[in-house]
Image (tube, rainbow, N blue to C red; front, side):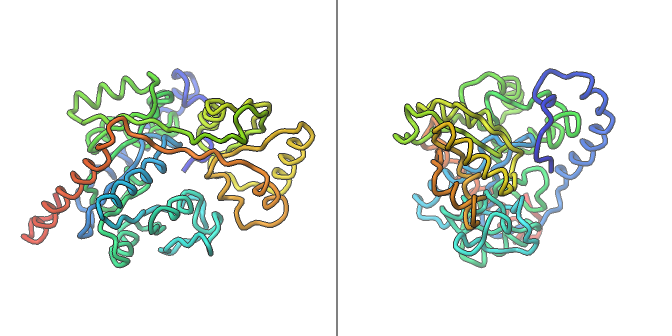
Length: 349
């Protein structure tokens, strides 16, 4: 998967996108066929997938966390299933934040594991089986909408209201992971994050396809150590500019921005440079929770930086507070029908 999306993906289609179009046709056909595959293994508990149309962040992880909290409020025992992107472990593993680092299991699973049991697995079905064996009665899959070889009971697709789907082309001429029409057909609902207009075209297409729309916002937690202070903001995420806007929204005055590729493995030299610049300019260092967990457990400059920086925490807040619970209920209802059909021998729904 691409870790640093080309800038032309997020602008009007130009010669670079057109030049790669033949490759996009091939990629799109393969991805579309994979998504359309109907013969997939299943587990006896509901599987709710949180995905997005494109490469890069749209708010999947905070959305998954919000749904897990709603599930726990209902008395359920949710578990997260992640591929563990960025980690080197290739076997199915229960994530232990006290024992694992981001280099082993990836950054997002470490964040998820703070909320509920989290399993990483390159084989989604195997990971889902592990969560069931561990006692989970709801599986929340973080990403994997296009590629999961597992029956999904509810597929929520998250879209950023500013970026939308970029130029609307499939990889490599654009950021789409599969043809948009097939993705809309396969999803259960669309969730628009924020109040921008960049996703409006997709929202209208989803509405014509009869897909329900959920609205939500990423709400940062106030931090008096950032408000009114001059800061050095650094981020190794898919859309660093979104993070910088968040810092400004809680009162931080950004004096220096330092952007890195998504899931970036920081070198000691890079971290030392951040520390040096912040000290020379008397700046507060701020970053995202994803970047902070990639520093945890490391010695030297990483430990020094982690001790000094402020993490900007955010929560996904739905416009309709009942929306997460309703999606969980829809997943449960679909699972019950599916399991009944499977018992009768007619296969998954």
